[in-house]
Length: 117
View 1 (cartoon, rainbow, N blue to C red):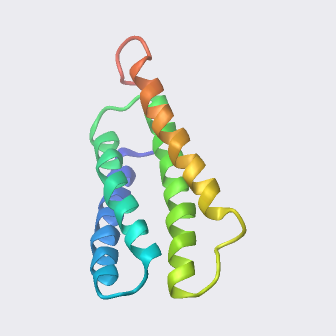
View 2 (cartoon, rainbow, N blue to C red):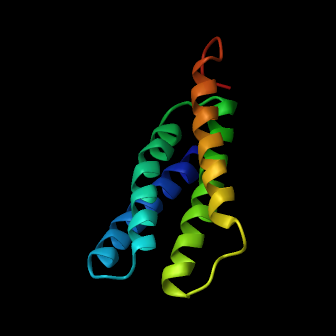
């Protein structure tokens, strides 16, 4: 994945997190607040990976994290704004992907040698 795309996604996640935090403060729903928090806590890691000369493991981790955010936050936001789920088990699948993404970030630290691939 191109580093510029990761920086773009990080900026969008941060913007979305701030906007959803504002919406949640005006009573849009408890799921919205959770989605906002998840977007805001994952935006910096995507930004860091995008700004680093990241190795393949970090790039894979970023893709996994993005997929997890889309599923997890998408499901929560669908519940609050549409009244239905994205699809059955979307949030748990997204949460599992988020955990896998963070484990991949940790695994990247164990990779020997320079981080540039």
